[in-house]
Image (cartoon, rainbow, N blue to C red; front, side, top):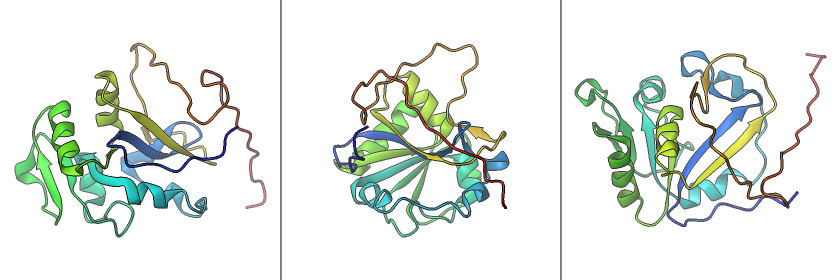
Amino acid sequence: MHEFTPQTADGKVLWHFSMSLDGFVAGPDHSMDWMDGLSDTPGIIEPYIETLGAVLGGRDGYDKYGDTKPYGDWDGPVFILTHHPEDAKPSPGVTFLNCDVAEALRIAVKAANGKNVEVHSASIGRQLLQLGLIDEIDLHIAPVLLGDGIRLYDNPGGTPIRLRATLQEDPLAELTVRYRPIRDL
């Protein structure tokens, strides 16, 4: 397996999440408390912050965490796609959009000014992926099984989307991970 390659600012559209081993990016009601106590790999997040030009997110996550800035102190444009911008609680640096996902992405890409756009919404990411508008999916797999919540990709009856791994010798091979339950908590 290759060593982790830092993110670059290539004007990419990234679908970027920490995810539980069973495929959830948030718990029920967009809860993120499942990440408490998990350790961050040193040096992983900084390149994302440095290359980030704009964030595109959804209304449900915003309503839950609207006053929380992506990556804590990152300061840049955040776009929230919603059918009802008129009743959204305003926040500095946040623009509410009522348009289709492709138009929302176009607006975010323009605002990113050559840097990357990160999609922080499972639903919006799924729609953009189906339109062929996601350049890269970056996942940080957390050693936890949630069993319930917001799945990264939920498309019952849909066509499978084939992916090419970028950090392995064989880009079409399965990725093997091995975990053991913690029994002494």
